[in-house]
Image (cartoon, rainbow over all chains, first blue to last red; front, side):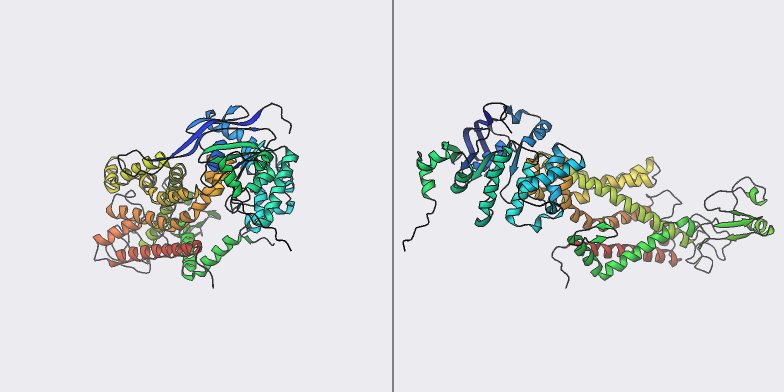
Length: 271
Length: 350
């Protein structure tokens, strides 16, 4: 997919998200927690962005804001120049075919009641209903793109391993040929051994379909492997941003340095 | 993997396990068959108990009075009105032209008045009226058959409609949550506080309640039974990952509710159904007993119970109504228990 419009796929402008907490006293205002505090960032077409930070740094909230699953308390989220939160619900729903999502837990994100064929076809059925044979061909395409077989169509999610399920989830996100895929910790629920497979797949798909990722992870290695750019989040704000190579080679912010230093190094034992 | 099929429909291993669990509850299983048998027998009540013959042969032709009304003149009589086949004169007319009459098993309808009773009504059981007659000389057996049918049908229709309404109301509350949920819950608290019985009594003095009036009126209040369970299931399921995923992927709310959330609530709903059926039957029976139910003259178990109370010297009325109600409700309870077992995820087969 070639970039027709120059510039940015996603623009996040000074976005803040504040959640109310349960009231502590009856008449007092409920306390709040600021999950995202005035974040601005932009994702260029074809330049995957990784969002890293420790737990509670607001990266998943930011992902939900980009997906327009929640409205921001302040600020704007624009996708292809359209303010997502200004759209009416139906228009927003239709636009969703261009930005899809992959979730963390592949055991929870697939409805156990349906066969893989139906799960993968679901966004297609909802957003651009097509004829039976076209639909089937596209489902098979999507499954093959993620390395699954046509025969897997009639199976249930529980018949697959975690890595395979995450592939199914990726196939489901791919089927509407989106420009952006927001992946929230896509490999953190997977065994170390299958992580590489899924990450390789994501890289290949980016090249093949021109998908841009917004990848959220607490694992620096994952982001380093897949993304072109990295943004480091801490306490709801972006503290550092730059190309992956630059940040990993020469972190500027103290928090980034801490984060990098926290990655355990396997000592090389001399024989 | 070979596909598992049940009456031709593809079923999942889970469904198969539920079926096995249901069958494993022998009491519930046999209750289901017995109940279905009773229902199947009473459903064509007009062919089982009727004061019109099934077949009449007369003058070389065949007549089917059950399904078609013939004037008495068709059998050589004097009147243009429909023939009264219980009338000896009509029977003589038919016999005169080498005809014969095939009667249903019980040759009385629920409103047939038996004019030649051996003792004053209510008369005790005898070979002609197997369970005796009520105080208006109507055959109790026939009234039971019709009464059973109307009770079950009323309960079933009420259950179906109140389930649909209840599931929809619970679904909307649980799925959207927040203010919708809060206001709806408060509304239901007020609504459930309305005195149903008084409303019915007031209404009975304005209109003559018939089957559909009563159904609608009871429906106004019975739908609330299911809301709690369904709402709870929806509140739980709307935070499931696959429901969130479906929302992020662009599915509409209705689609998510029907395809991903509702199946979770179906187990609770189905388990509830037999008990809702009991509630419906009991409600109709008690209204009939009090005299605010179906219009006077209709066959109903509640009315028979009322007659039993008014005629303690004729115990066959009260005893019959009691036994039939007790058996019917017990069967449904047993079925309900088996359904509950079937859907119990902790129940495993040995």
